[in-house]
Length: 312
Ligand code: BDR
Ligand code: CA
Image (cartoon, rainbow, N blue to C red; front, side, top):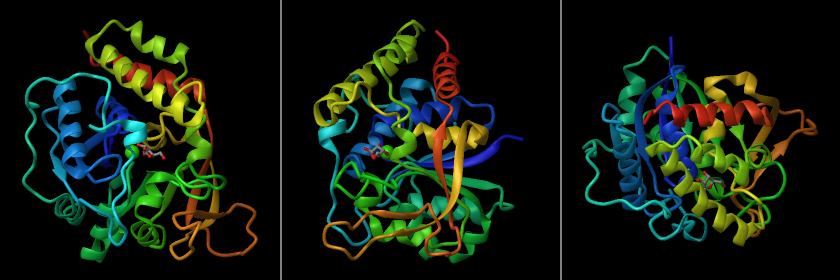
C-alpha cells in the first residue's frame, strides 16, 4: 500500500522538486498539496505550486492555500535564494490549468486527518505555520498523524542566521508546537540536505533526459545554482526538500539518530535554532529522529528516475 501523505510546501525550487518526486513515486499516495508563506508570500508560493502541477500534468491532487504569515513573527521571505517570484528560472505563460481548492489548508489538513485511520504522514518542507495551526485548531488530529518527515533545522550552523535554518527561523513558535507535539518526527536538517548538492554533473543528468520535465528541472536548478553560488559559494544548490520525501519513499536511504530537540524561541541572537541534544547530555525523551546521512547515489537515482517517469 502506498504511504498517504500531505505535502505542505512553499515553492521554492526544492519544494517544486519535492512535489514532482512525491507525485511520481509509486510508494506515495499524494493526498493534497498545501501551501504556506515562506520562500515567498502566500499568493506567490500558491501560484508556484499550481504552476508546477500544471507543468507536470498533476490534476488529481487538491492544492489548498494556508497561512499567509507566521503565528507571531514578522513575515520574512527568501527572495535572495528563490527570486522575486519564488520560482525564478523557468518561464510560465498564462494561468495554470490546475485550480485552487477553496478550502483553507489548515481545514483540509484537519479534515483529511480526522477522516483517516491514522495512516497519513505529513511532509512539511516550509515554515511549520500550517501544521502548528492545525494542531492547535484540532488537537484530536495528533494521534492520527502517523509520522512527520520535515525539512528544517540543523544541529550546527544555520543558513539564515549563524544559528537558524530558514524554515524554523521563519516561524519558531509554530515549530515549537510541532516539535513538542509528541508526534513521531524525522528532521531532515541542513547537515543532511547539504549532502544533496545538485552539482553540474547532476544537472546534466536531468538535461540528458531530453524531456519537458527534465528541461524544467534544469531551468529551475540552474537558477537555484546561481543564487547558492553567489550567496553561499556552493558548487551546487542543496535539494533540501526532496530529502524529506525520500525518507518516506525509503527510510533506508537516510540514516537517523534519535535525539531530544528543542526550538529556541526566546533568545535575541539564536531564536529559530533547533537545539539538538545529539550526545544526550540532558537525558530527556528523544522526540526526533535526526537525519544524519544520505545515500547520495540512491537519492539522485531516485530523483532523476522520478523526473524521467513524466515521459516525453
Ligand atoms: C529551506 O528553506 C527554503 O529556502 C528551502 O525551500 C528549504 O525548504 C532550506 O533552509
Ligand atoms: Ca521549502
